Image 1 (cartoon, rainbow, N blue to C red):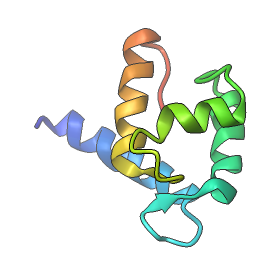
Image 2 (cartoon, rainbow, N blue to C red):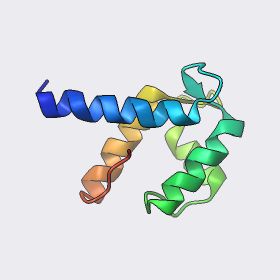
Image 3 (tube, helix red, strand yellow):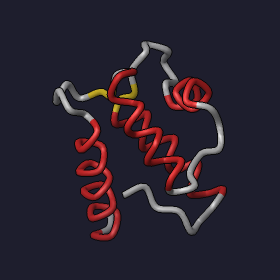
Image 4 (cartoon, helix red, strand yellow):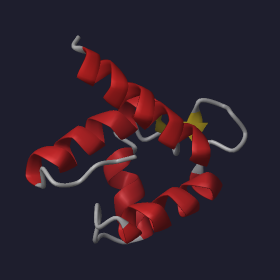
Length: 86
């Protein structure tokens, strides 16, 4: 891992934690509404709230983990290299 990778992961972790209000390590549906609004504002999704949650929640447990978020964001950044998730 490069220093740049570590810096990016640190930024993504801080961003994720802003929306994980109960500090459970996952973003539940209630918390996801705020994250979704921010993703739309940043142009990272054009899907509905439900569609975006379904896309991020890869294990279908009703929550978005940090790993799910990072995996989804990396896919978004490959599609649109100008976007950043923090």
